[in-house]
Structures are given as structure tokens and as C-alpha cells.
Amino acid sequence: MKTKLVKEETKIDESEELNIKKIMIKNKNNMKKESWEWRCFHKEEKLSNSALKLVDLNLPKPKHINYTDQYVIIPKLTHNIKLRETKDQNRKELHIKTITKAQNNIFKFSRKSILSFPIMKKDLLILKRLNILNENNETKSLDYIKNIFETENNNSLLCFVKKNITRYNIKKDMSKLKKDLRLEFANIYINNSPFKTISLKCTSKTVIIEMLRKLDMLDLERTNYVNYIKSLEKK
Image (tube, rainbow, N blue to C red):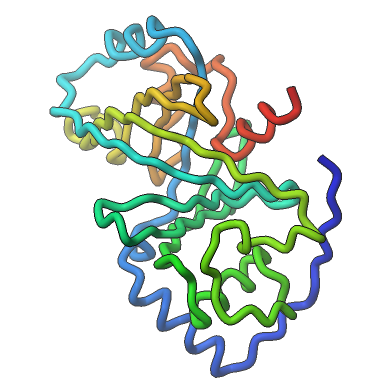
């Protein structure tokens, strides 16, 4: 996929800047800290089972979560952008995270922005600030996910991902590590093709590496959702 992405100087006046700040304050998810994430995709059930056996602690009762997401893949951006279905069938949300740091394919993500969909003018300012929309774009609202990118400038891709997640929220007093962390196992379908993924999430990259040692998983290939979907498109 060849594409050209023209980066233009951001020109947001003070009133627009204030509107953005108000939006961010209202967004409860932005109160969370930035987090590091390690992720591996695989197809063998025994990998997940082996990892659970190697966890030398009494795991808390897991949460079982199902999501249906539509990822927006823009070749020149690393943003994690997905349209997520909610329990309210008449409402969807656009979730956006950006990569702020990366080390050995362990990624630090920004706090998540969650925008109600369709997207109205005040929230379009956030999309412009993140270079998802061109600064000169005069769109008043986004009613369809395909309109989130300008097809003449981006050979972008829409990808459906269904997720069946088993999530363990592990407190530091339980793991004897310095931070709380989240361990997830998931059965997923990417455009109807089955995959499995394991992930660790924590505010500390060091704690993630310590847990990977416990799980004997340091040598597994690491990536993230967006990079993995891009790699599938190249095959």
C-alpha cells in the first residue's frame, strides 16, 4: 500500500484550543495514566495454557469481555483507531490511542480518547490535532466511519475485529511486583480469520519484563494490533 501523507502545520486558535481541553477533561478515560503494553499473536492454545501454569500466584477471578471493533488503519500513522460497538445498539464510540514511546516492540500508549459517534464539530478538532483529519478539512460532522479519512490522500483500510477476552487484573501485593498489571488472553477474529493474542499492560515497562520472565515469554515475537493488521495485509 503506497500512500502520501502531507503533514501540515497545526493552526488551531485559542478558542478551539480551549474547546479541546474541555473535551479532554470530560473524557473520564483520559484520567488514566499512560501505559506500556506488550502483545503477542499466536494460533496455538497450548501457549496460553502454558503461560497460566507458569504464573506463580493465585490469580484473581477473571473478567470475560466481548468487543466488536472496526479498526481504521492509516498506513502512515501508528495510531490505534477503532470504532467500538456499545451495549446501546444505537450508539458507537470512536477510541483513539497514540504511541508515545516504543522499546523492543513494547509500546507506551497515550491515554485513550473516546468520542461519541457520529462525530460532531467540537470532537473533529481532536481528530485534526492527531493528524487523522487534515487541518483544512471543512467537514461539519462524520456520520460514517469511511469518512474519517480522506481517501484521496490515504489508502486507508477498515478491518473488523471480534474479541473474546479473558482479563486478569493483578494487584502488586499479589504478584510481588512494584506495580499493578493486566494480563489478557483473547480469541479474536480479524476479518473472519481466527487468531489468539496475549497481552500485558502496566504503567511500568520494567514490571512487564519481569512478568515476561516469570512466564518464560521474553523471546516471543512482539507487536501491536495496528502493526499486526498491517502485516496481514502485506501477505
